[in-house]
Every structure is written in structure tokens, then in C-alpha cells.
Amino acid sequence: MTASYDTISTRLDGNVLSATFNAPPINLIGPEVVRDLVGLLEELSHPGSVRVVVFDSADPDFFFFFPHVDLTKVPEYTDEAAKGGGPGDASLGMLFHKLSQIPAVTIAKLRGRARGAGSEFLLACDMRFASRENAVLSQPEVGFGTSPGAGAVQHLTRLMGRGRALEAVLTSADFDAELAERYGWINRAVPDAELDEFVVGIAARMGGFPRDALIAAKTAINAIGLPTPANVRADAALFQQLVRGEGAQRRAAELFEQGFQTRGRTELGLGEALGDLKAVD
Image (cartoon, rainbow, N blue to C red; front, side):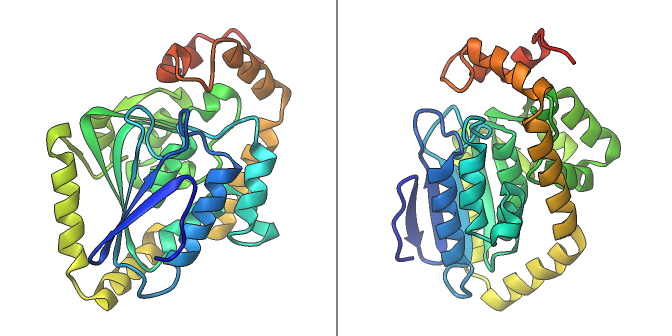
């Protein structure tokens, strides 16, 4: 690894790369974060760079670099996303699809909240391990007046089955780690005190295996389990359409009045706040 990034710190330990996201104040995804992610994925797309990548967050309350997208910067971050796949793929969904296909094993280590695009980033990783006491996952888009647009519909339906995917997406509710594990959203819920050691161990184990075997097996499983680019693009287009609609704008405005996208009660308890909104089409 040769590049440095403003919102991602990296550390290479043998064949394992640690990538920690840090975009204060609450790790919202915006153009700077997307620009760094595009650059990192470009580096990781070259075979032989690393064998395993572990993603985590410097923020104990908000996982990775986005509890959800910054609704004030949708055009800016989609422009940056296009640099990862071309103007025709100007969406987080296609950027995350690229993440799923890089020639390295990706592990997400979750503490705090991973909502919306944050959850969809996790779902694009190969494996997800979460703190049993301190992890929360949610796809809140329907509560805003739109639908998930960066992979959740595709991944959750494959992982959970139709009924549970509908429950997760249509309720826009917060799921704790134990329920997320039971439904298949994450691989395992691990006691918080054991999470770091567990992830280090599993990453080091895979990092010691032959690279060609790791990537061949991942590629074969991806061929069965990943959505097609056409399905990812369709979900992204629907999100882009609905998020600009009057209903979504009214609900977002009500949330902003309550302190949305700041480190406060509304953002920390977003699942409950969505259920209490007054703006209804």
C-alpha cells in the first residue's frame, strides 16, 4: 500500500491490511469519504496487494464512515463514486459491488451503529462480525420515504430469505447484534471484549493460506451469491428517484429539525425517531 487517505488510516501486518475509517463528527458518507474509498479499492484491485482486509471505525458510536448517507450531498458523493466505475455507474451500489469483487478477503468489524449505506457497506464485505453488546444495524430508507439503493435489497433477500428481508427493510427498525446474527445479517455476534482478538485470529488464519486458493474460492462463491450489476443499478436508480421526491424531503426536513445528522438523541435512536415522524404521504 502506497497511498495515504484523509478519512481512512491503514496498517499492514503481514498479509492483513487494517483499514479504519474516521470522518468526524459522526462518520457520514460524503464526497471526501467516497473519494478515499475509490482510491483504496483501486489499490486493492491489483492482485497481490494484500490477502485479507479488515475494516473498522475510529468512532465507537457510528460504525465505519457512515451511519447512512449525508442527504445534503447526494450529487457530490455520486460524482465521486462514478470515478470508481465510470459515469454510467455513479452510485454507491456499484462502488460497493466492486468492493465485493476485489481479489482479497474483506472482513467488517462492527461496533456502534451501521445504518443505511453503512449496513450496505458491511453487506458488500465478505464477512461481518459484530460486538454483541454495542452493535446496531438498520435499513431506515423506507422510513425516510425511499428504498435501499446500495445493495441491501439484493444482499438481505439472499441472506435472510424473503420474509425476514421484508421485515428488516419495511420496518426501518434497529436490529441488535443477536437478532442480526439470528437473521443472517452478520456472520457472528461476539462479546465485545473478545471481538478484536477474534477478528485478528480469523484474519491471520486466512492470511496464511495460499492466495490463489482464497481468491478462486471467493470468485466461485461470488458467482452464486452476488447480485448482477443490472439489479444493483436498478436499485440505485430507484433510490435516486425517491430520495428527491416530496415525501422523502418532508420527512428528512422533520428529522433535521430534531437534530438529524448530529451526535444527538435523534441520530443515536434513529429507528425510534422514524416511527414517530408526522410527515406521511
